[in-house]
Image 1: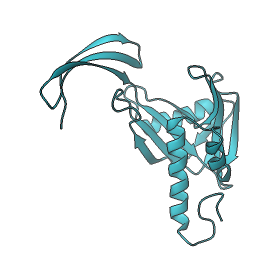
Image 2: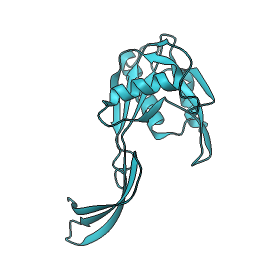
Image 3: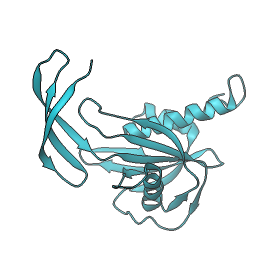
Length: 190
């Protein structure tokens, strides 16, 4: 069943977000007004190292008044490739330049009301290039043991959707690389 969009008007907008009123025809033929958010795409990176650690930021999100660990992430600028945005954000927010990035996941966190796509990339190397240039992004930047991630999720120390998806996908990828029945499995497992 496909919904058809007959028109769209901007209710409010900024450079990276707009609220729209759509004229939508539902599958039963009824036309209704539908409010939606058009949001720029977001890119993040899971940066891990040879010591089985992941680079995270401890930050406050004022809209939800939440403190939690997050991946480096940000808006994909117009004309920018998502992988380039992820690499830029890692360096700006942490002071670490990521090694080659590979695609890890792609999600649409609010497809019923929002059109943003969230891209997560992964690298297993990074080099320190200096202090972060984005000083308003986080209180702390730390390398956290991957084995600790599951407990952090359970304690609600990681709550960002893109961070949850990225870290869980990285853990699954690591477990698949080791294989079932072999020592090492999922970090933190036996």
